[in-house]
Length: 134
Image (cartoon, rainbow, N blue to C red):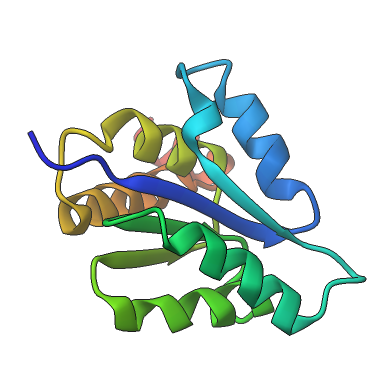
């Protein structure tokens, strides 16, 4: 079994907080998932400080952000220099559930790959999927 990996959700507004609440319907102990929301009144410096405070408590860290080209991801990228950090953008519910459920079963690299693959598999054009399968 691998070291426990901290999960951190970085999103605009309360999107991440609501995803964490919803994930609790499927997996236990979601209160261990970290969250940093970026709000209109926040400066970049304030958001960076929020992140820095959480980084002091983690060895391995998987950060899930909301948008690839957004401030949340650009600030998260700064953590890559510290080592055992992986970042995946485009957070959705299945990514969060998978990351939280499997975080003790894999190392950080394997968990990142698993979550990324699950997310890709779960994004489907249903109409095309149904008719291609038949």
